[in-house]
Length: 239
Image 1: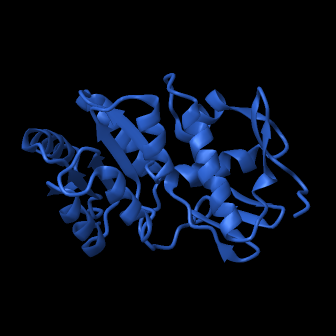
Image 2: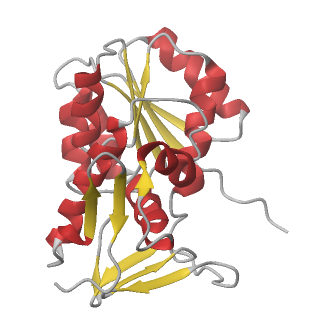
């Protein structure tokens, strides 16, 4: 039996000590790693290669990481993990609203970085291969179909282009359709985050998810805000 093709990660940082440190540990974990040292190079490499994950510093020469993410996100839903010494809530919200999937502040421990990497890659679609749907859930609610095995969501046959974080969030909401889910519950169940983080991360991803639903013609209010509690995917929604 042939060994599976290693997942490929692009590490983007202008500090060689960081790219060396991160790359060394990722290679030890069995990943294939490319490195870019500035924003322009990162955008070019992301266009020329198919990556399973991009680890992206915010403070870069030429163009910053936020702009790099914006350009990549215009063409791809590859997971993006931001690294930054800027650790304010606003910095994190900006990164997530631009399409990032996670945000890790410098300095960081390698165990935490690897845990974030593993979590993102577990949720990312693995290529275009056929997936055995046995044991995987398929939801069909109010015109939305979500197939966990195929990692595909559609609305009345139109593909909903989702990042891994958005897909898992929608899957969790649909699996509890009609039930209000709190922000901490969504963090733990959708993304397996077992530690307390800013729950505004959920609000940011909900906004992005609603935008994606609106983009295929679905009323974004199918994800209802229940003030003071959380969010609910509405059953029997009348669009």
